[in-house]
Image (cartoon, rainbow, N blue to C red; front, side):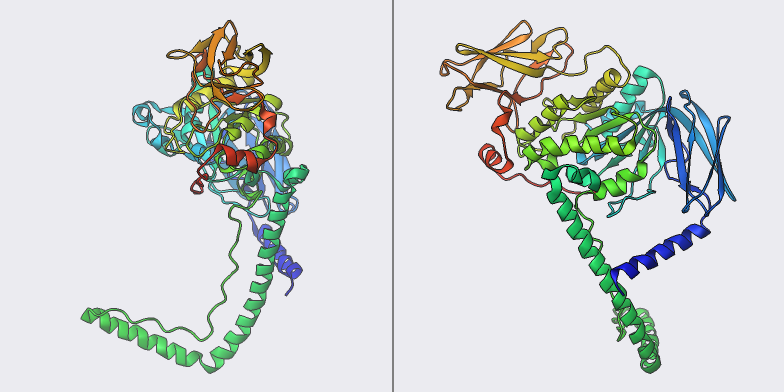
Length: 548
């Protein structure tokens, strides 16, 4: 049996299943769901071929005919409110209760987004207060896949002191602050996996659009080819097994059956006498083992299994916390991360929705170039914001427990970018440097009501001349600028702030938000390996991977 025939059989089985299928919506359309306000609302699922499917929601009725076992309708934009009931009917009917209309955000990334509320430093104080029935979270429980999936596993849960422990901590604090500030319901679709790199979350077509990322396309293609080869071999083994089983049944089956009965009788006697059980007799024709699905940490598989099934659910935007697993390729991340953002926007087809992300927190094995790659992505990618966490990291733990400030800062960014509030949502953002004699004069965006040296004199700056030997520098706030100098450097060419694995800086603004670490010479990193080798003496330790 060849690969083609294997997949023909799988296709026939799938078709047969769809012929028998009742009307079924995508799992996102279930009790306690939150739908996006002010936008066309797609509703979709599966049904028997040619079946008429009717969706009714708060006075609206839309009908579709199932084609290739699939159907979809679009409800007209709706104001925030609820609860409402949605009915989806064909030959059977499904009633979805307690549906709200508000704001929907996807929260995704790796373990610091997956980090449960219960582990947050303020969890015990916050839990009794977490009574927010208008905040809901859908936790995607599906795994990775080699092909884009249409449906997923998961369910919506109302936020309460009894349920909040299993919420994403960052997602909860983001939703809480957003709900308090705006008043509308907030739905969080949580889809994250610990220990995963950005290429796993980017679609195959998205990776194909960037030539420098084609190595990931090749890796994926080889893994898929190997799996298909295993499937072909397994199909042949199944045919051989059936032939051998038929022959064995006619010649040895009765003897094995007698041996099996004797074994059962002996074990019953052993049990009565307190003796250990005897080993079960092994059949002469063991079943072949199916091929192991090697999805693992292959490029694009998490997009296929945990993001594709969400599309085209109407959303407001995305919050993202990831990067630790790309720590050893920060230069590549300058391209990969913007490509991921563009890919998701292209696939959703809802414009350049807000994409708000967290700059990874300081940790002894995480190099500053990765934070820099995130900083540069923010600067060049429209409608994005970056929550700086330089003050809430843990040098000894890649999973810092201070998650409340992270969610709060993301919520500030959402209020500004997504909802147009005139508030400061970022710490000082390095913009440019001008060299005058032995001084470097740094200018910033997001100064707000002024720059601040928090808790003492300004620190964390280094400066270098043409020899690229960086030394500790004196730094002073002068108006909306920072002036940097050092006695040893008469003609500076570059300045860095907090550009180490675990920075110790204190540049903030009056809004109470810290500045990102930065360097004025980002072009000095033109490839990954050499720069990384110089800046980090101990090899980075991989983060544990656990699907959530």
